[in-house]
Image (cartoon, rainbow, N blue to C red; front, side, top):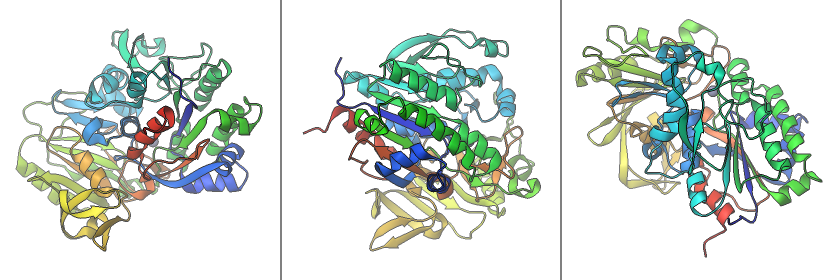
Length: 487
Ligand SMILES: [Zn+2]
């Protein structure tokens, strides 16, 4: 087996945000992150994918494509072929409403085996083709080349009717909560995924045992849970993660040695928007807003009469028109009257139409000629570009509140089959369906807005950087770090 000159360790700290990170570093709360920043490069604003939900973002990072190609639309969506809602873990109440066994299979089997498109390759698959090894700790998207049988953990067997073992395709090294571990004694208090301590225990074990693969992707999830409850400026969560990072660095003779031995990428996946406190105002109850329509219930397959399906991804929702085109028109009409709604977007005659609950007017765009943005993407645009906060200077489209807004919104409207609207809430607000989780007084994510879309990254142990500030452009850079530059 071939070996890369320097292994890459990529640590995805779920929900790490620029302002609290900088504050934690400046106030001495995060010495390890401070060390990486001082001895590497800090990029405060990386553009994540849309909707800003974990499985969609992991898919983008691993495949170098947006959802129009990797086909994992979000955490929850309506599957037109199966005629039911697919839920990859929105919240326990909604998971139970959607059918617990179904959720387990969607999240742990179908997400990688079926939903993630076979037309795209993950970094793990491409590295294997090049004879390099790779690993994944606590990432939900992990598709690799090794077929492995997994059993449903006993704690979950009691609650589900799912039959195991399942055959999944993983990288060489694979760890996921209580489903799979590399260190036999790693304790995972959360059944569905490992917690931050378990993730770092697994990574430390690989380093100690000299079993680190060429590329290691390690997901650290707990900060997200804290911030949903406590709001974005919780520094204590960063402090706890930093302490674990210090233990990792302490495995080397000096912290500088760690940078000589490996390339380190510390990256976040999405930010959060602070939520308001008053339920009746800040929670946009879509069933209430769309009263009078027959809406499919979670956990059921569609029957003849249902007009709409809903899939709420916190601050973004997909609203599906299942029967008549006229229903979609009346839904748009109703959404436009609600000032809490930011963007309403849908496909029409080969273009994407954009309206808003907050702003007047309409805007439309499609991939094509006419205008170019800073990512060298070409667009035809018409109408009021302020709806997507675009400004045009010297013939170039510049993004304001919605980074890479045209490509990201377009990717979501082409991410799966169906006649649907993509709707986002203004910062401070979030959507609700019957059992979906809400985050009053805390924080939430999911939308196209820069609050959730721009995330920090620290790179140390290499002089190179990705070709752009977009997560979707990182894969070629990662491959180059591992395989060397093609001459
Ligand atoms: Zn979250």
